Length: 392
Image (cartoon, rainbow, N blue to C red):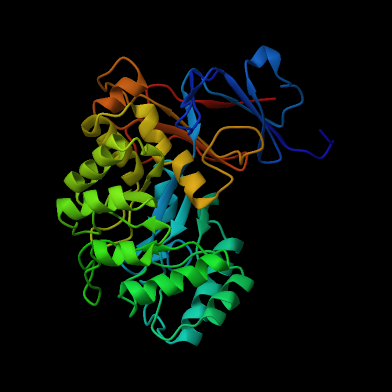
């Protein structure tokens, strides 16, 4: 470690969740991070914990990867005109979300639909959130909505400018499977990942995207397979899970029953690694700062999956599908963590039992790139035990 490195030590961890389905719980009580990346994981007496710049005493609480919201609609800064709400991203940080991924900046007033305009807006959005992280939250933005008339060169232009995402296919004028498939192939050729709207219209002006369009388009992410807000019929949801190998995205602002159906189908197929979580906020139903935690608790309680597995849906699964360097606690990954504990007076002997019964945990601290970003959450139920910074 050089003399200019910044070193973080998190000690006295009671439970360490990895974010990895194949090993969701790690046998460790300490994590060492250097310059915003994970350097060592294990037992404190076996690690190099000397000369730390920051020491966090977890006091026996649970440490998990920072949560990833796979489906948001940002506009500018920490403001959304959709609900005339300020600081909605900061509020989500207090719900444990450390990374957000745009599914399109579709709520921009007067959103340009001409090709020059939509490319310009996507590049500007990508640059804005690359340069500005509200409360430290990582926003992967700049996700243009497909419009008729786009050609391969447009996707090359976007990729050359740093755009890596498409907005929800189907929210623009491109609504047929054949046209969408060609544009998705162009996007994929230039390293741009795609998400497709699934289900009925979300707002006036949008339309139905059924299973046939989703299968034909072959986007990388089956966006809100449980509807945003209106879900497809059960047989179409099952068909998409069975006939498509792309990511199965479940969102808070969708049909809960349909989410459970998709989860059960993925489980029966032994393909839980495809399940990822989002909120689809801001939306007509507002902003849900605890939306990802609520999805974890709901899927665990009603979907018959262990809580530690449900956490993987919002961390490691999303990171792998989205090719991120966060979401998993292992060497050289980004040092993004949440420190959580069983909520005060909540049933369940442990935090995992409590979540399995449908209860939200209390967030006691968030860390992004090795820097403490928030302490006791103003939004979750109060945690039974809170971690603390230790004076050096």
